[in-house]
Length: 404
Ligand SMILES: *Cc1c(COP(=O)(O)O)cnc(C)c1O
Image 1 (cartoon, helix red, strand yellow):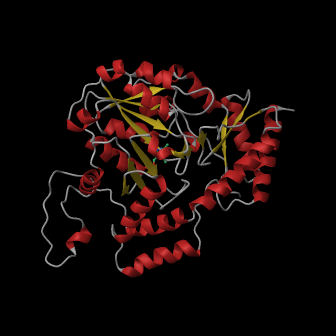
Image 2: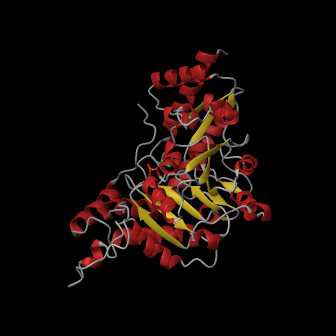
Image 3: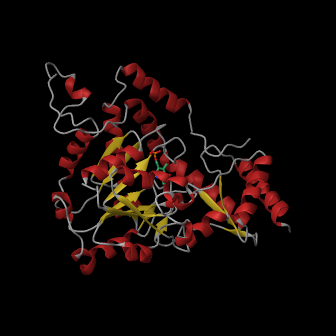
């Protein structure tokens, strides 16, 4: 069976995790701090805070920004449930918008239509690793009429004076845009290092801050480190200094710090990340070369003059396949011992959001994309022979279900 997205665990990773274990320091410590510095350097962002998952990192971020009751956050209808859940837990309302035709990202015109005086943030999602239209979103939130209707409810929001642009970059570590890393296009880019992501720490995440001039990023770093550790004024490492046992709790915080065992994996993953991207790109190109010859295939956009994907997911679509036919094709592919997936079921198809009144009919492009989409395996250890096996399995399954 060709798996869908196994982690890359080899002697190097095992040696670094072992070294962390043998150091006697297993929770947040020197490896986490180093990992944060390396991520900032890689992305060119102003500061980075490592956390135990994207979800909890974003939850703390929304809390820090003061998003709650009565506020709205705009997200695409086509995303993982985490994007909506954190907004709901913050007490705010996720406002869903439909997608672009050309890619899987949220449509800026639809975002414009969805903005109200209650909009506090836009959370774009770089689906499959292809960056959203951050430059257009930045222009939009800076338009005088849109800035005028923005109402700040605390000092941070006042200082920014406009809608916050968040990037759910769970798929897009290393993606490029306008000549630099996509990470610095948003005010804050947020990563997931879950086991299936491009760069993993088993579970984990990072918040990369790139707010405008006037925000003190050293102060933000300190504040976030306190917020992710119960509001405690000192972390465990600081408390090991002689006689330094006493701490205060400044406000009730969260608990979602990254451990040094996770950071040990991340340090190795980041050190060799370019070879990971190169391998992924080569797999994308092989899929593209094969499927562009097929009249039934709609291949995904992953490179333009302005943007380059991080090659996280290859989102193949089968032209004219209904949802039921797509499901049958997936079954046939699995019969040939190849694992595939669907990214994602749009939120209005899922019970939790249906119950909140979201309707699939309001997001026709998201449904069209979902109904005939199949995600193919992409990972460093996938061999060229296996790529050919996947291609053959897809061809065979499509001809069996759709006819020749
Ligand atoms: C994986 C994923 C998340 C959640 O990340 P966790 O680290 O598991 O919390 C959020 N958004 C998207 C788009 C994802 O794919």
